[in-house]
Length: 124
Image (tube, rainbow, N blue to C red; front, side, top):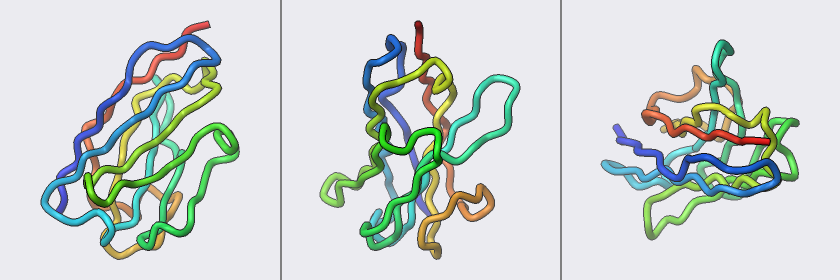
């Protein structure tokens, strides 16, 4: 099992950028597929981005494509979500998730391990 801790959230103006980090402990990150999800108040948790176990393939929700980038640093055992051109509708709690056997998925139930979440608030 892997333990995940997100950080990097905060308050930012529309059009600004944030980089979220997901520090993993317990297992080496390159043996997992990774996902970022978000949950806005009153809404269900939704897919944002995913990274395959090999690190060679990425997937994005249409709403963030071209603005967000998922990546990982094997040496730091950390997964990132770079968020640019932020919009008010990006406001949510962001969660990272790890899938030991997957290839990268938009499905919540594909992931066995979840972090506690980090709040991102985008103001106009």
